Length: 165
Image (cartoon, rainbow, N blue to C red; front, side):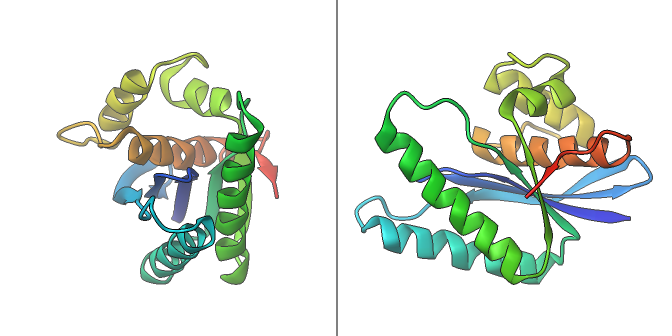
């Protein structure tokens, strides 16, 4: 049995999803978003994200953390904000002594939907189907985090693993 914390970093919404994988049978233990107040300084938003992830890690005791890697950003400002949040995610996981794996967004979509250009709605629907959920996880950031965790579970079961950070 393996518990995987999947994280979809974002400065406005950081999605998280905990998946338990028992010999290929996966179930969602928890998912949601961390939503810092957009009116506070970036440092305070990062602290909120860090503390929430530390609490999730303490509560669920995951074995590994899987994080969506950086993707193409249209502006340098967006890339910097996303990189700051990713750093906070990596720090929270490292403080807990967890192994961290990164997966490109296209690889995550490929693992869950079967094609790297899948829409957010397609990812949400497949997550519901793969995990036997009554409805698709909302918001999409929570579904994306579950997708990252599922991608890691599949990668860990195959000879080609994800990129360890």
